[in-house]
Length: 167
Image (cartoon, rainbow, N blue to C red):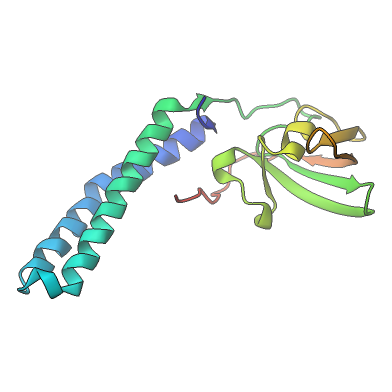
């Protein structure tokens, strides 16, 4: 099974592929040609760096195309009072008494350091579909879990530009 993506994620990935093919590919091919013209290739650092960058771009294109071929499209709509994709959720963690705020996103946009929690993470899976005031058990593994209480669900009207991991 592939990555879970929203229609918006697919559009952004398609736009990146198109940009890499139509703009970056041409620029990188020209950079390789230019570096090649500088002479002896065995000691030409510019040539090796340009080839490496061109290959990195081609690798990224293949990665994104493979991701689209295997993707599972998920809806980013939820009821007005429940946790869904692209919603911001404020939770109270019972273990440490802390209040934390997360935005629930697809796995390719997940970045826990930036408060973007994947729907495939333990807390993301646990929160999906619950409502304000619900006490939710977050199962981390067979031996460990913890409880959180949903304090607030904030609906996001438009999807903001989020980080899409580069591999």
